[in-house]
Image (cartoon, rainbow, N blue to C red; front, side):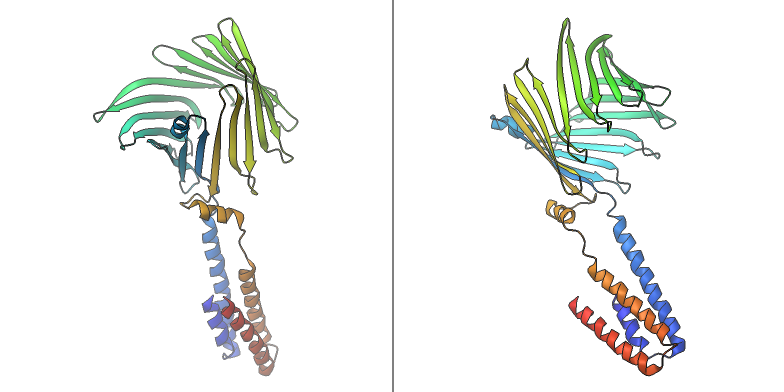
Length: 358
């Protein structure tokens, strides 16, 4: 911007033939300013969760301390989550996600470290695709002892789809058992039922109900224990803009009620999720999410960015002054020099005052 001021001050001492060149310089300055603004805005396109705090609330303080954690999330240049670090008072989980060229997930891995920084467990999962459609995955859990990994358990899942490309089957197998998940849909594409079977026997069934906005209003989960069935219904509530604000589940057999409550910031991003079990064996959790632009920022910097809009009045003033300069150049071709000098003196005074303010 200083270059623009210098260009204008030189304008008043130029011949008319040189004023066209000055106009071109001013236009280039404007173009450069737009380019810089565009470059600065490119890094602000990825508005994501950069930190999470998960707090357990329980009468047993040691248990609460054990389950509480802080998570930091990292994203790549395409706004894809690539790393998440979960830290507790005595351990750390380090999660990694890698992607294929078509943005599908290639594999995930989670390392569990103890308080001494030593690997205890490693979980890995790889995904296979055909024409961009997930067809199978392989998950494995490994223990780490004396520098070597040994397999604890492993399973492979195959996926099936209907004619509209919707997942209807997920079949997971291990050496000793297999689990099948069948999904059925309503005509409008909403999920109607999700049934899970273990070794061919139905174990759970979830039924969904929706409102006119195709949002879930309730889900009823039925668990089957031999000849006994236990059904629990969770009801959903939304605000006027159809954001989920609460869920409630009454569990009479266990004599407790579970509540979920959700809070949002002015941008509509979920920032607080509260879970509480009231009645028998009460406990609660609070998950707080900090949003930012996908770069490493402190929580205070992120909150400041989220709560305070940018003040564009200063930049707008500079564009107005540039427009006046261009008008002055044009006027020099139709007005005599004394009038141009008078206008120039007034504009120069405005620019100097503005420069002193900044």
